[in-house]
Length: 304
Ligand code: FAD
Image 1 (cartoon, rainbow, N blue to C red):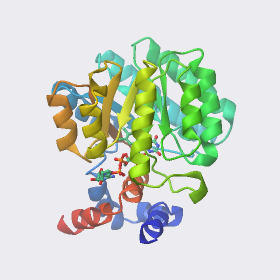
Image 2 (cartoon, rainbow, N blue to C red; image 1 turned 30 degrees about the horizontal axis):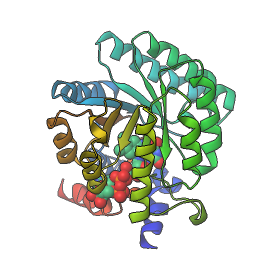
Image 3 (cartoon, protein in one colour; image 1 turned 60 degrees about the vertical axis):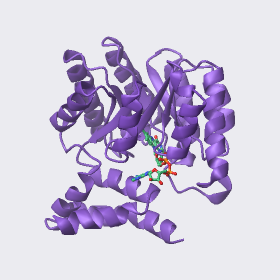
Image 4 (cartoon, helix red, strand yellow; image 1 turned 180 degrees about the horizontal axis):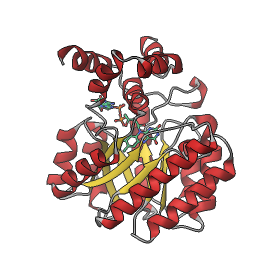
């Protein structure tokens, strides 16, 4: 219950506005966010990505945002993603570009989201870059999957994230295996109605492993996006990681020790790097999915 209360506080829009408009609180919270976010601007993310690539990691980049409310803001978000794609292309950096569909138009109009996605996929295609769609709250799952399927039947460079904690996801996985895009498996970061999900448990771990096995058997490209050491151990023991279609992916700043271990053993290890002024949102997600982060955030704020 404490954890649920914390999740509500962390994602509360009023609190977000208050912090972002406060001259005193903004820089303090920014310090806490710095643990997970490369900075507010594209060069911050490019620098971080370059350093990681030089160390032998694969990289995903996200310009943070969701639920964009006006067409002008959607246009700006899409233009930022296009600039990111062109800059990565110009520097021959093979990063994946990750984003929420609600950031680029889906929250206003399904067609706008789809058109912007297609434009980004086309731009990325010329540099052989891949896009990865994040998965949002369960009320948006159908819309996100529909848009993905429509775009993925034209562009082969679009992947999709699937939340293993949603009960519906096993059926979704079966269907998504018919599309070419990489499937990123995550446990799920959102607070959902209890009847829709399987909470963090041994059952969820087993289910996660089942999703991996089903995808590997289908010879389908997947990203195993987790910081769960138990899952990682099974992935190594069962040899899933030897498959060239399989990669491990972790959020920057969460378990650098673990992802380094994977990379040092010669496997595909991807680090998820973020940037943008909407960093509070990202910090809120990290606190919501792992409440002890509230203590880390407070100590980052007080200790600075
Ligand atoms: P958990 O059981 O939550 O955690 C296992 C252990 O990992 C914890 O005990 C702790 O030691 C460590 N840990 C986990 N999270 C944190 C954290 N935030 N800070 C510090 N330590 C932590 N979710 C979505 O709903 N949609 C998405 O599109 C999405 N994309 C993602 C992309 C990537 C690359 C990754 C890695 C995650 C993504 N997530 C997404 C988040 C995901 O759903 C989980 O909330 C998150 O990964 C935590 O779950 P876990 O699998 O690490 O396991």
